[in-house]
Length: 361
Image (cartoon, rainbow, N blue to C red; front, side, top):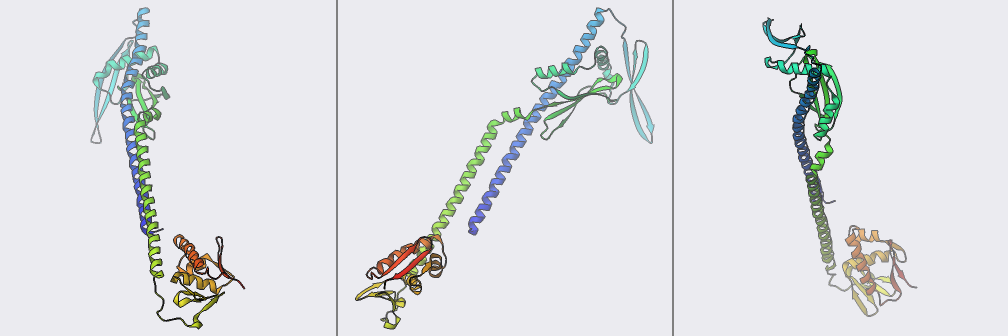
């Protein structure tokens, strides 16, 4: 392959790869951006669902308490912070003192603020009636159009999480991990995952995906058409070059002096003067081209034997290219016309193999 064409091929392939990578990078960013918006929306939905779930349990406890005229569950909460100095470092410890039905207890929680006593009380009272209900939360998420929770579990935690704590996982951030303090007084927390399926996001990007695919196809077609045009032009230039080379060779003039009889090569009743590009049959004289004289010389040296096309092309033209092969067919036609006056001489073709100069006896 020509060096310039190879260079164009390489540059075209690199261009296509860069375009494909650029489009892929853009689509991935779009996907991540769309997913991040959905995650932020899901966080707000999750907060509301957790509040509603807790409120249902709390109201259930309140109704049952009112129905039974039960006032035994009394909780008093007081939050204090103790500061100690140890190894020249100030350590702050937040303690929650509460009195439940006359019994005093103390728990120590991280990230606890002094204004959170009422919220902690509500969570305890809701959990006293019924432990955190996964089914209720799932129904609230489903009603909002999201997937139900996965990997739901209870675990012990001394960290107070007033609002849910989130983490995003998955290859493209398609899973929201949630942790939440369901009953801080008993160090109880819940953790679960909510999956954001990529199918919906991909459907929302369908037009962008289709447009990107169409753009890549159009660019690929344009580049392939350009390369094909260059290849065709190179082939035309090569044929033109071979034609001009042949024409220059054909126009070479034989010597001006008359040939000697000893120079003649007998081909049947025809005398062939190689150096003068001349054929004589009786009184009739035919001037042939230099290229034809070269071909006839090769055939005459192997009279009645096959001379392969490749050997003729290599000897006369220097290579067996397609253009030279077509030129050989034309030159054989002219040689047959030049030898036509001598019925004893003929050039026979052996398809795809070569030619035989036959001389009748």
